[in-house]
Length: 223
Image (cartoon, rainbow, N blue to C red):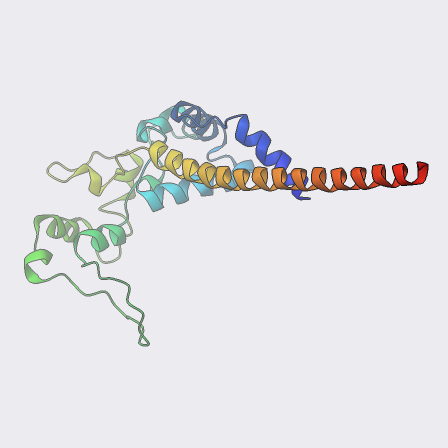
């Protein structure tokens, strides 16, 4: 088993896994264009939404990518077509957590933390936090209206675009994560290559010893 694993590892290692940013970009664009929003590829759609929410990014290069893919082109209503999905936009909860709540270190405790403390008065009443309190009602999931997120209503003047839309593409985030995975795999590949080499040397040594012993036995019998 180790010989097979070592062989596969060495092959992948010495054929140099191609993971350039341009290759990653082309693959992501192809996946987003052909599979996002397709009922046959729900896992792809879920993965994209998850990445965009978790890493605060949108599309491959930017949110503009969505108006050129099949998901957008197949929408029936021309005047109310969604130019981007909701996962491209920060929720009120995320905005409130970032700008109005203090970040505290995760210290193990026997008593569960029921709520996160507010920032002190000087931080709570910042322009950013007050703006969020103004655009997010108590019952709203997204600022003002989901139509703003979908691109059907213009962003109000004077409010940062980042409060309504993830302005960065996901390419760099995904590419860096893939590079880390490849780096780990390369280390494992080196391990199996070295293990394979040791196994080979051990087999050669044993074979040589047996061969020499057999030669001595043959000479002894002949004499």
